[in-house]
Length: 433
Length: 143
Picture 1 (cartoon, rainbow over the protein chains, first blue to last red):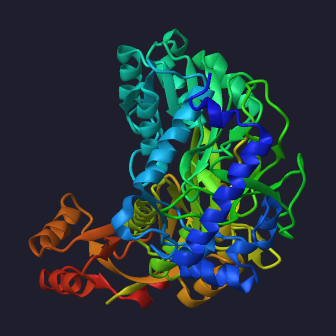
Picture 2: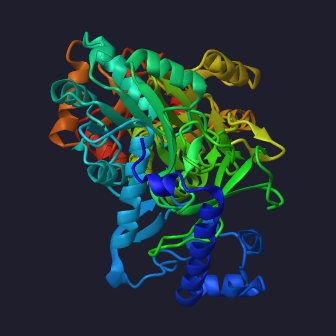
């Protein structure tokens, strides 16, 4: 089953011809409309017209998250604001988020790619899609929502949180497809179990899980506890949002990346050199149909590998392996992207708090937990309990407000945080996926 | 009129109190009074000692976070209602007690209570005006 059979099964030479044409058009577009790219491409000694074959892409420089930050908020937009119909944002490395804008056609393409993704996961018209991805600046909720409508399924716009209500709706409305983070699916199954409900008796047939790293053993556990096919989906707001790549239900082996809209490359994150098929490295994506904010060779920082081997499902698009990590220090906590530097800048902003801190991430009852340990020095210490407790609560509140992630602050004695060669180890991730 | 108290931040983990008292003991510091405030994560140990500066510096050397605060030592008549009289006076003057604890030694026939007020000067004036006896630091450290 396909949503757009012609393009999803395009023979390789035809697919590459489409890619080249679209890449050339994208380069012309950014060169004409985005001063940042005119400089960047110009400095590399390349003109858009020099790209005559797909391999010429390697002559172009990379775009990084830092570039997006430097262009905050609209500097990388390649369409005038009158044509931008939607704005989303995700975590930046410090206080300011990374902003993306979509034209009406971008939204249309996104809806189609997400609809293709649903079909690839085994969903179809007539399904009742329970969408528990967060609605808002985060792309997850609205991205899956538009795709579900494009598919012609019935979408329930649940958003995240309020677990008991999620379970009641799923049970009463007869949801057949669930979209959320993999850890939240297990958390819901556990919560249902405590209420005396066996998740396996629900009508759910397919679960589409993403926005955080997970593993094959987690898939086995989810499929066992929820009695559904658990499918891995990949996306990032910089490139589009959910639906950049997804597994097919036939193979469940690698995520098809929609190559008629994105050109994937795998590079060595240290040298920037392109790696071959099957080699593990950092995923770099060039968008070739986006209008609002096209990105050339964007470094995703996600570590994976790529294969062009034909797939039993019939799709000709390359597959990337399940994400195995990051080439930077970004953490994904309950589906929320968090950089340690963001927490550091919040701590520095609170008067007197010396940024001797450590982040301890764990997973309890299938939910990620974040503990921020802060060393108490004389400037923040008080003989009154209420003063110290107010400090903890203030840090917790600011982290929640700025980053959207709930944490617990623990005040610790000075020098308890391990320092190695003068540099403190800032992150202890105890999660086992 | 005021008494110097040192407070020490301690994490809730075993052996911390023992460590502090050992450090003070080895430095020849005598603990005159103490109170421990605790939460699920941390505690604040407050001490009246015979030598504030030495106590503070030996603890800091060992990596503890130490603060010095001014508190008030008040003689409390050793009879039913003795403490109540003091608290009523404070209440009338709308002075808040942040915390309080008892001193180990007696002063004459009376008990001694250490108070931490939100407005220390105002509290001292109010107590004196109502004829309560406030103890000097020097006398207390050597009691």
